[in-house]
Image 1 (cartoon, rainbow, N blue to C red):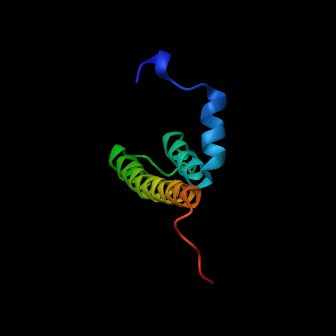
Image 2 (image 1 turned 120 degrees about the vertical axis):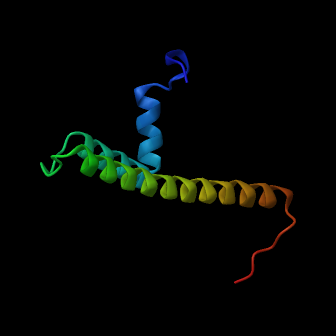
Image 3 (image 1 turned 45 degrees about the vertical axis):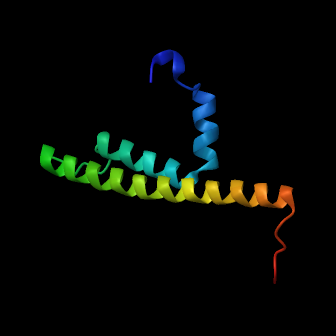
Length: 87
């Protein structure tokens, strides 16, 4: 993605606020980068922590994507009026 294609800071914040689980994971990544807990003295430890945070963020991002796809599908079906929800 080029700099011209980058969304604005405001657009990024809107997206993060709409996806609090991803926002939380980004904060966790930044905490590792900044060594907020002051416990990462070796590159291997930092790398392992970053890998774990990235893995969690990937899982949460996929869940958020799946939830969004489900919402879109439900809206499309309701617009067509072919499905009736039961209790």
